[in-house]
Length: 262
Image (cartoon, rainbow, N blue to C red; front, side):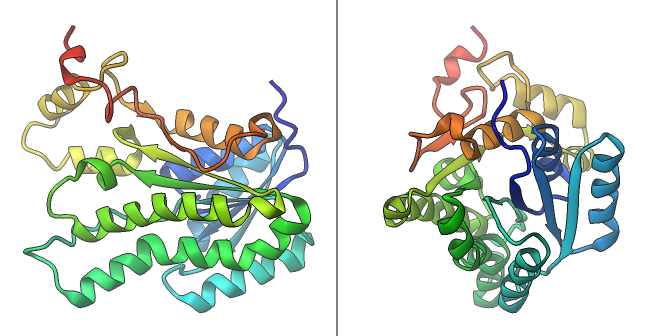
């Protein structure tokens, strides 16, 4: 299916690794211009080089998104280079383990800046261009907002905020014809997930336990599956879809656990 994304300028935060990188690669395959925003230029450049080597278009911009000025400045730099923005994917963040018992005010607020505040700032600074292009926004969020996880109060709160902002922006931006949706990630196989699982005493046993509880096919979601849904939601093929919080998770969050071993 042609998603009609050719030459569209799509800004993707946290696109140097994991889910963000897959999102950038899928947009490039759809002939969009994948604009990678990340903290480390060397990591950004690796993705840009890989995309260009495969015949796609990409560019990178460096920003520490927990710094509000960086959010403002990076959008200005993107507009200066391309003259337009057609879509925004808010993806950057980290499950940083700031819990109720082991956290404090400073850590909690810092985590909100790392995980939610820049979602607002990137959308705020991008909005004038999205109004011109009648673009769209996709927020990548986590199951932790709905299921909890334990010892990650700040990250769970940030994701609850991401979901709420998705619905709020969908309402506020109706008048501009701008659609806003969210893709919820549950158990998705990424390099970061692999690194975490390998820290456990019996990594394979834990992985088997987790996948046994994923109802559809008893397997992890792939980053590409998240990316495919993201591209669809930013395309005009989803032209009447807005305000939706879509779980790409093999039924992990909503289906009866009894189904997992059926």
